Image: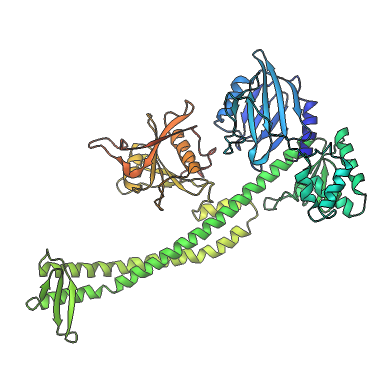
Length: 582
């Protein structure tokens, strides 16, 4: 989120929020924090790569069924408190909301720093009580109980303190206004984003004003708080379709009219929040469409490669089956020449008098008689003959499916709506990777009822996750479907689903993200899901066995590890569920 736009948003909030009582804390389905102050005043705060947002909210986004621990804690400790003030350094993207309740003053800090974005809940002593995101970077990783340390301020001059002489020096360092000038401005001037850096370059390059005048105008607007929120887009926002690519350089919110964006359509708004809400809604819609379309296209490519490999394997099988006549010939020779055979271990040497008079060497089982070995040859011949029609039928099916994939791949590439993408995925029983990927594994012969089925998901990293549905399905999944090197997990000390993560490559470790997503499903599909964080045991399936005489679903685990996760349903898990069972 651009820092100058953020300044405008904070200025709006400072005129609305102070004195208001926080009535409800909610979480959107995407994980955004929503603070409800009553009477239609709601604040949305989003953190994470590509999702940093802060603005008042008018619409009603779908809410998460199970809020994250950070949201739950805010709901317990912040509801009822009143906003005293909202502050922000004009040159930093860190916002503080100060709340006061009978228990004292608390502070909610929103660090909108891109990949390092986070939300932190501080006590009256400024110590961290909770945080929304666990960051990998030790430099910015928060720790409960530790004093909050804001991001370090860069030594470079800020947008409000940069002297005109220093600006001229930057231009000379870049070889003039052009080339690396925009990149140098963004890097060397705190609080100045690429949007305004491009505007400065454009206006100077077009000869409208000199560099000092352009800079002075921007600083004057910032100091005076003279904002005019505009949304720039490739076409009128009301006409933007789902398939229209909304890249950041063509679709953004600006603090005032920009000469550098004259090639785009501009719409003026009364507030930044209105502009940002529309921007976020359209951007999220396009990202969801683009992600699913790309994922489905990738799935079709993967399916094509899989079918090609299967086709090649079937061709080899057919070739071997069509050579099954050789087994019949060997069987007849063994019976016809049984009195003149020379047997050496597992090899029989015989003179084929009807086949050119050559000596033949035939592999046999020395534990069987000649007649039994001949019967085995005839059995192999009959089995090969029976398999030919089945292999040919399967090859026809593969060829037909391959023939239909090409046109459908073109339909995916030209799809203009998310509904069309999902219809194609459903029609071909393919799920875009990382999204809508649940289907039902039907029961085998002799198994009846929904208890013998299992759900299938796919993690955000593409790993297949199978979830049992009842004792019989758990038993079948663990001992009938999974392979020894698959990963197996189950909620510790509580009845629930067996969860299997497929591991066809036999990797020794499961990736941490997939582990957490699968474990969150194991916790959710267990009796322990209503009690907060759940311990989940995980191991490879080869260390799981069925006790003798035990009822279906009961197992013994030889060795395992434990991970603690919050139960998350598929709708909130990165390993997401798709349409209901069919």
